[in-house]
Length: 297
Image 1: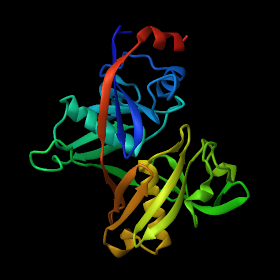
Image 2: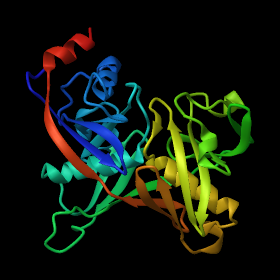
Image 3: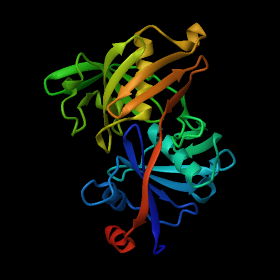
Image 4: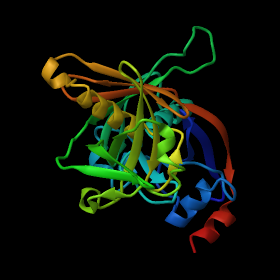
């Protein structure tokens, strides 16, 4: 292992990440080490970790190398591996831009949920320093059949099962406070609906095609934002409202407020979903290698 491990810290609508650049995939990041890095008291702190690797250098991504040079090896805050993270992809792209690997415009990013298309907009204002928003092609939503129920305390709600490359249960509630503290995963049934756990979104209406959510992300607890969750919520809200772009032939756009900001989600008639929002790099530094190596023992 190198004696110097660089890291950066970034966030997308306050869904925050430790970023570890490792183009040739030489840094060992066992689950305990990732969890320690994401610890907000004893580590750097983050909802998850973005391990930045060239696709050709990672055994899980080599088959995508011809489509996407870079692979987002994403880990949850507890160190577990996840298929996708929508806010993470935007921050991942922002890092690639900052490092000079890509420029404004279009690029492809490999993830365990497949290759995602990304567009980095020009700076927000001419001559200004603010970076433009990042749009991610999130793929198509799958809507598995079957009834799902989620619970908090003595309250229960029917939930829409939506898969965005990772699983979601979307429950529409009267008040976001009904979601409780969201420290622990909200119980759901049937257990067979989500054998590997689930992200649970609680949603209220704010206006026409405008909703707000709180989310428990599996492996992280309540987070300030969840990109795939915002997409799942927009699709669930559209179907609840009788809107299906595949039927109408017109795109459907929802504004989704998350605790950390606002995301704009558009579902196109071909089923493809695009998510647009900010992505910010806030700091960079070096990890103490001796400390990190002790965690992997």
